[in-house]
Image: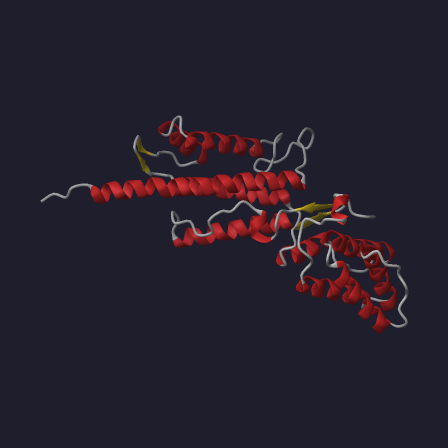
Length: 299
């Protein structure tokens, strides 16, 4: 079954060619699949699909060795168009799996891992191939990986959480990715802002909602107040069983499953709030520090 994606990509793909390192990995996968039996026939299956990707006619090679060499040449040619390359590889694996159900072939998770590793900006969610931005970390809203407002131990937890979310999203586990980021949003808010001094007094509360309420009360009418309102609304929607259902479970009767596109939208929204909150916290604490250092000393 052919993948579904924007057919304009056949002519103008929204990305650079598939890099040599990725071609090497996909070629190695094809050889490992062939090693399970019927070596040349399996290689010919891959060749046939890559011939389609390069607008060539498929001709059977004279030997297994030539089949390997011809396949590598065709993969090199197909690499100029990343969507067609991924489609050819994925369709080959799907056909081989149908013909030999007991065989192990690369699945969408493994293909996505290779694409993420080599910054190929697509995500495979059969039958869809989705564009994921410009590849690598640039496919996500940028969040400082070492927030100045967090202690060393907290920074390590923060970084690992961001990485788990990015990995989950690239592997097609959108709900887990968003759940990780909600946890991180709550953790950063309760860690960074609890007890912070503002012009209107110290921030009270221990839990996310209470701290946000106090922050909004003390920053009424500001952009910070509005951003916290948006973040709280998103947090509430995603927590609800009839909304995102990522914290309190999904209502299996009336809830709606999260699509890959929705997961990426939610992930980037939360990442943008994280980046903004960290920047605001740094500004707030810097002002407090400056005021303390400028206060007159007793003689």
